[in-house]
Length: 277
Image 1 (tube, helix red, strand yellow):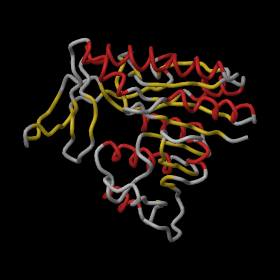
Image 2 (image 1 turned 90 degrees about the vertical axis):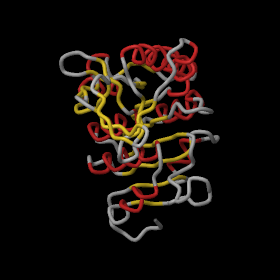
Image 3 (image 1 turned 60 degrees about the vertical axis):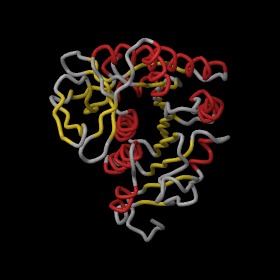
Image 4 (image 1 turned 60 degrees about the horizontal axis):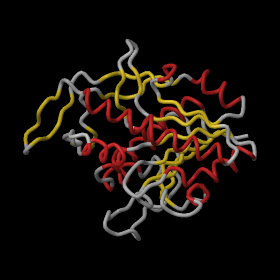
């Protein structure tokens, strides 16, 4: 029996319920599966409708994230924890998987540290933002997750996380999935989104980097642009944390999970063997 963590993105054009059938089949065959999902497009649309449009922060190193003030966090929770999470749970349960929808805030599944200040580039200047409600996952309640998994259930997890003193914080879902995979000693982490793989040229889908390991991680970091930087960082963190294999692949194709597990994306491992990168 293996443990598989699947993160499916929430970008435009991605329907996280499409993988429900594959997940139900994996669980029926005895696999332990945790699904982590995003909801960025739903949040953006809801924020626009509610008159509080999304703002994006870009760090000096090029990493992008959502500007998260209190109103944005409220809207974020409506989309991630409400509409998207429950749609995924409903879809899984229709297919016979005993899904349980939770955020990282619930039961303190994801305990994280809020950033005291964020460095961001605005109009060519680096500024400090001090009122942002975001951070990163430091600790995962594996006892609770293993209890769910041991009883045959499928945890469906989504941000936010929570600080030790009980403040909800927005966290990057890819990195939260990586932290979860490492904490559970997962065999595999799949990062599925609206891009087919890590590409040498983001405009050329045929420029896929097939494999990345310790010898070629620098090249992978250099190739990553925009949100892909976060995915490469998440993959690296998972591998360093002991996860055997991480795959960045498409969520938009049929049988997306099977394709990713077959290596149809970018595969990260810890070995230093010669690879195509």
